[in-house]
Picture 1 (cartoon, rainbow, N blue to C red):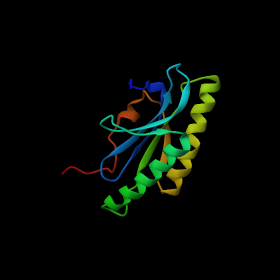
Picture 2: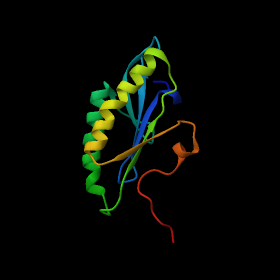
Picture 3: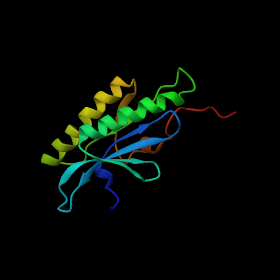
Picture 4: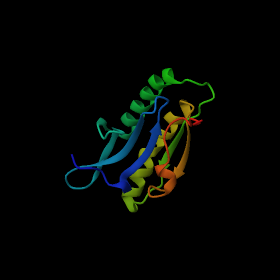
Length: 132
């Protein structure tokens, strides 16, 4: 499987354990959007399916991650990438983000929109840890 294009990145969702899930639109051989792929930070594919299946997977993963929550005050912040596509592809991109936003809200994870190429998107993931 070839590496997905940055323009197809939907979201980056951090977990409490320092892991993260990165969601991309997946494309078939004819370069048409055919679903969503979830990767971990090492680039391993965790799930390929519809936007709803990907959102359900993220919800289950966040529920498992909640057990790793060390401090009750820790607040996760998911990054929802801004769409760089046009036309029907833009509609598919925004439709793929909708179920994920609902799952994140239900899990108590805040989210914000960021541009895929901004420095903000490359900041550290997960809970902030003060270094002494």
